[in-house]
Length: 402
Image 1 (tube, helix red, strand yellow):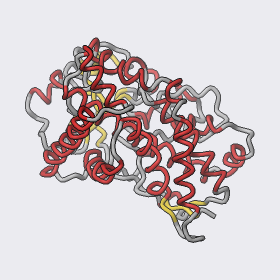
Image 2 (spheres, one colour):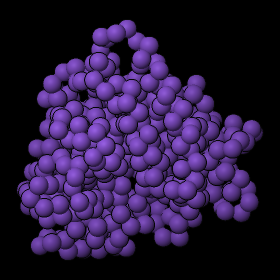
Image 3 (cartoon, helix red, strand yellow):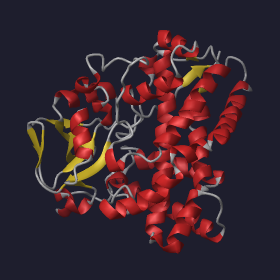
Image 4 (tube, one colour):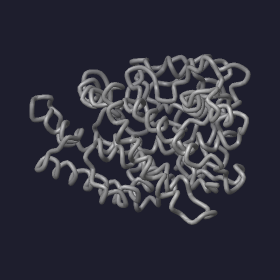
């Protein structure tokens, strides 16, 4: 099996995803830092493995970890071993941790957040409209980032004064270019910041999910302080990064497919279709780290060996022709059916999927209603991804608002 090295600079994500798909449903890959693992790259096999109880999240199953081959200053250590949360446990412990979060993020409860999201969106658009006419704007920094960060922070009870420090630390957390000597301190700083947030909420509880997690722990649900802190960090990280990329990628897709943009702006196609097709075609999450095989598992005509690590390559499987047909490589908002798994599958599907869809469903039509003449300020070919192998994340999105 030929090993495919994932580009730490993410210079050609589409090309890399195509190579992964061509390697078969199970590809042997090398993560930045020289760490070996396997990737599932086809839709059907991903669904199968995401519900296979022989695939677990316990890092102690990993042969390379047991042999001491994974250094604590590896740039991706925070994603491979982020501490105890629903991201790293299975079975009853996973259900216990996930239930508390999922109950707060049901579709019905998330819908109650709509008015607040609409208000935040309007405020962001008002700020954009107040800029000097003709000024180039980084839509990611000025619109796509603040909205989900403010929404998830309000949901979790995180003070906006912490946003600059969170942004700085998460930049290092996700990047493959963080110097190894800075990784341990970065992880310690993140832990310290989220511990402070939890301690403050314990002293001054509010109507937020962090306070609810603390209360549940005190009422017998047996969450440890570590689980609360790590759950808060997980939700903040995942709750804003995915939605930023979803909004940005949808705008790029619409601007580079003007006929389809006119269809949705004219009301012939609903915005829901734009969101689902963006999730499939240019998914916010390129690769999800990391699970481990407790025994040899057949995947197509290959075998995932016992004790080896597995990542799920959503960027590859979103354009799998076996699932989406011969036009899988095309952006098509009229695609039906559109059964992607961009938010995962099975017991570990993202509990924040409804919130991300709602935010994008509010933000995108409001953006185009306010700025119908919006145009990319540079050719799409000049847009560059950040050096993050897990997130499909642009450095910036320069636009002219018109």
